[in-house]
Length: 114
Length: 118
Image (cartoon, rainbow over all chains, first blue to last red; front, side, top):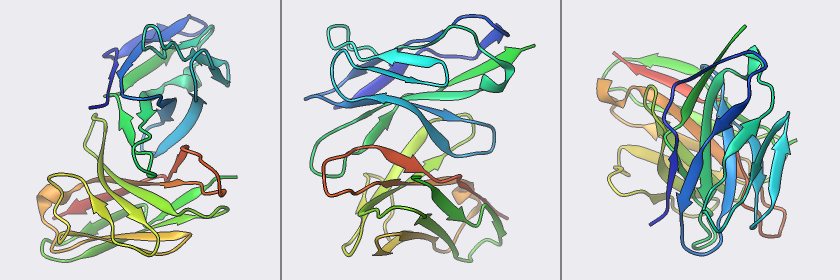
């Protein structure tokens, strides 16, 4: 079956530090890949996505590249801010049937200190 | 665009009562909506897939008679937790998949509903 493995947190960084959150996946077919962010007490917000190999998703300074050869979709940001503190979820969308269910990783808590 | 709302945002109820949670897509039509449950500091667990005009598809281990789902229109799905017990206390999140008449697989999430059963 499908699965997503992301680095366990928590991750604590100082403001302006470089961020990498690793994510690897196992899936049949050609899934779409996503990063979602969850701020405290809120639902999930789509951060970025990529739908095919070598695509790069980007948003708000965050980037992730769909690497089929390494089955990875690592999240990166060159300079984090305190406001980036949140839980980040890597996910894939299975294309079985027409419902496109999401499979989530366990989430990585990021804390950015001033 | 692509905003999903949930109501209520939080609810406290007595054990044995039923609670209804609404999920609405505000600016798009959603043939398919999903209901998730999230425990503290854990990932989201898919409970069921809700399809407009048909019965919901429940994930293994989810009691369909306890978690009633109705998707009566293209913009509204409801989850009713029947005869709630303290172990049902959780954060319930819905999502909606935008339907533009072509294949698209992005889900947009609601802000969640915190249910506490006393």
